[in-house]
Image 1 (cartoon, one colour):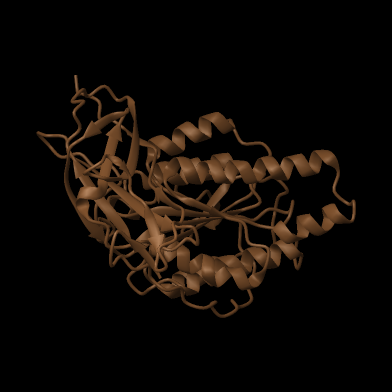
Image 2 (cartoon, one colour):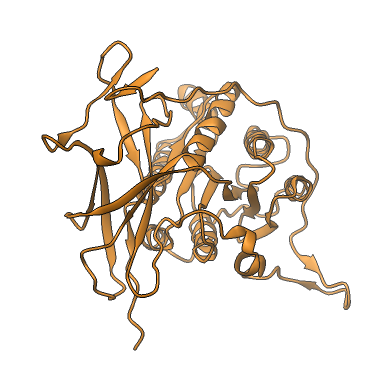
Length: 368
């Protein structure tokens, strides 16, 4: 049990979820029923813009008409990844570009999830019945099984290009149908930067609580955009990224046997760092499981982080509509001393905690 000041309890974690099932193949293109010709899937699904049920909850950064009002989701997580509830509004401090802001209100947010599962599925690693193939399916199916009936989910797989296997839906059968298409990987390329930015930009127009679950090795092969461009696009899109890095144990075993070369080792270390950076800069989190028994706890932490948030509302002191990126920092302080708020366990011992939120938002641009 964790205490913040007094009587602030951390929620309990449920046990591992059941093992996911088997899968069958996915086609690379859709077929026009009227002509019989193959065609590319639509670049922007109409459901992302037109479905009113997706517009639930508060945006990560939302603006109203005459006066700019920004809402920021922030989760306070202990050193075991558990959400810490019950923190008084007066203990929050918010800075925009290092300038303290007057917080209008702090609410507890708990809403259904709107999440896109972006899954690496390339012949580079996910060969049929390989370790990486099986782990990818375990993670994808396991998280899908943990969704609640009111949660919206979409399935996006990528290799050389990204493909929408299932558009946003609450229908578990449609989600299963999308995952059922993950069996035979077609190409060896894994263009992660293109896939993740494309999905984030599409989701930027969805109102409400939203996130991307990226299941990936983290290695990018031939994306059109660079790593730095990806970081900038993800920050501007305002969609939190939750990353799960695959093949952790396999990589350690190969390294111990001397089967991994120096360049290969560096590629994977860089990949892990990129997954951590995407998560940190968008207000998400990164996980690197080594054992199947860790999956259930990761899914539970994802649900806690996505469903349980503090929603901070404020009017920015900077009223310029210049389209600039503004940095945000959320802190917990003792209002009497203006010092960092200590967090202690039930025995009075201090523990570490972190505040998970996005690093900023893009201001609106004035219409000329």
